[in-house]
Image 1: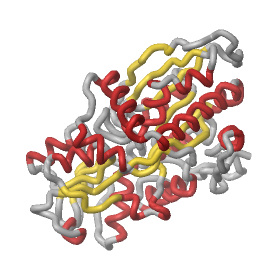
Image 2: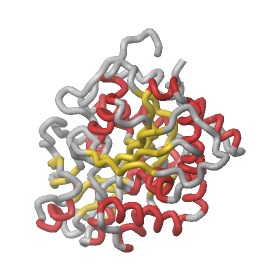
Image 3: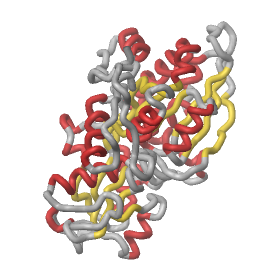
Length: 369
């Protein structure tokens, strides 16, 4: 950490990036579910790591495909050898951060806003971002009968997943760029920002209580399946059409005590992402199988096919975009200016990438000293 005191936090409600079960890119809700242990597939001759168990957490959502596929296909377990995976799934960013703080999980897949908020609220003491996982997968979908162009969004009711979450911040920032005025707290103004749980957004759209939504996949594709039209893909607003939607975080205590285990998980992540990108159709089927196992219901082709195409698996945490997202939250009046110096530690990731013959990634000057 630098000598500066981190300025924290949301003024009323914690900024979170997680979006609801199955219907989102990074879930909401307050509950987690323990998925139990994954027994090592092969123990003979496996290297002994510094702990017998690693507890990981993630969301049963497409933007957590690295974790879904990596666990489903045994790619993490292969790298961990005799160290057992204990996996838990979450529907909320805050609950995953609480689990990390309590030691209920050691490593987690999570969105940028809860990463920022968790880091700043602890004065930089509870977590580090150690890798990237996914980019993209967020769209503005509207009722084409009511909204035919971007200027028609003014005066309409547009849903975001939750007050202060990553998509809410992005939409408020886009509204400000149009020179329109909206009170961030109430959502009232030139556009009515309706904070709606993604699990009920499709029904809200069908009933006509909202005119559109700025949402992650696969919720966006669910709305399209109901007759909605993609008016804007958020990726077009970012340099190179890339922005972080899912990070990998670790407890600083676990990182200090078990760097070999963290490195093994990161090696599994890098290999999983490589397999996803080389085998998109098989990876999509694997992710959907994992979703079906966790929720009891797979996504239909009309939803998962377009949703999958808009999400990129990536090892790069796209650190500069996380910093920009924090600036957007400050601009919207939802977050006091944070000191994010030290939020990243990409040392082990870059070690793994180098060993795999891949390019190292950058922390945008926000690395731990």
